Image (cartoon, rainbow, N blue to C red; front, top):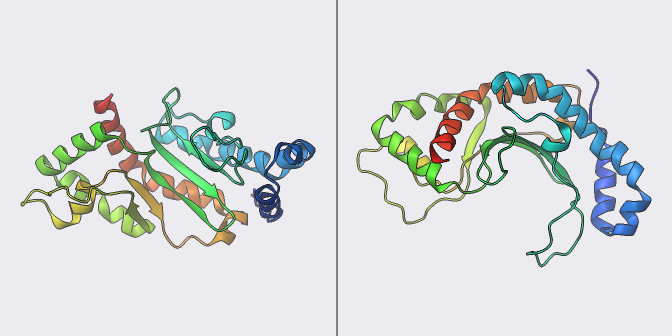
Length: 224
């Protein structure tokens, strides 16, 4: 398969950043669709069979998976009406974005990234995960080698004053104190986004992370 994304998409993203207004976007709507939205739709469609194998209930409709180009500026000091980039987020159909478990991928002007995690804080799910870490630590410990093999690290905000149980394995301490969980791919070369191997890279990583997806899904379900 040839490259889905072309380098000229970055040029258009930069144009949005420096011409972030309604008149510019109206005048360049066709260009936006061709250079940004359509390639993302193609990627979502290419990944859809893999994502539904991971979870048959996964939302794979491009219009539901792709982020909106319009920004919600109601509570922001930055009143720019448009984002200068897109991201994709695969989660279960019908679930709200907030606190959901999702796979994500994005191209920014300065970086390319992908991974798996909760969208924001999900206190109930994390409380259940913490209890399980104490009662059955091997469940999570057994999955940690996957992250090392696939070059993923744990990121997300931590509770600074949360005490960890005395008998908790040291490897689980950063998980126990997590307020957010994001498993983030390391060593990504921005050029990968513009190569024909991108879909395969994402498929391999997303499938490798599927045991974490199933684990997180279990705690999401318990919390709802």
